[in-house]
Image 1 (cartoon, helix red, strand yellow):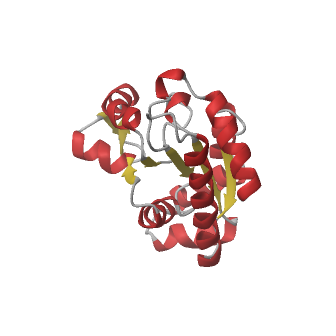
Image 2 (image 1 turned 135 degrees about the horizontal axis):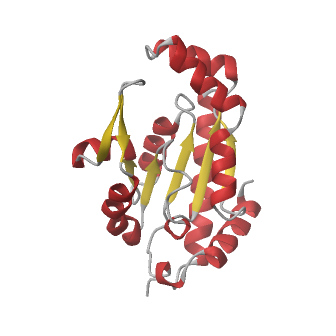
Length: 200
């Protein structure tokens, strides 16, 4: 998946996208994966490599805009209000140029929002160590590692978006991060070439 696959991806995304989204001058990219797989690191690196795109962390956005429906007392976390978040994100996604960073709501977002969906995968042992370093409780570490083993986010992405939009990338080392960003930047170039007249 590099230049030749980028052309295929851009063609597939164009076919899958709704006509209303044809005016986007820049594509929208969803970066997802189990906590600890490097979503934010990839999103920040991509935003630095392609400054015409902006990084939007869904959890941080929800906190800023108070887009919660309650609190999960057992897990000690806020519960995202899916409808409120989608309504608040709609203008941003319609404008284009968004790198959406989240492990939540992957199967809830409208497919028309995205031109590329990146699912990051990490070795289970490495993921376990990363989550421990974050200070996660043993139960929370186990929950997330189990989700990675069961490929929960990968399956959600594949069942929710056109198969040509979804790319699964390994995220174990800094070298892989660098390679992944290079691949996405190559895809961006192909997308722009294939959509050069859509915003005119």
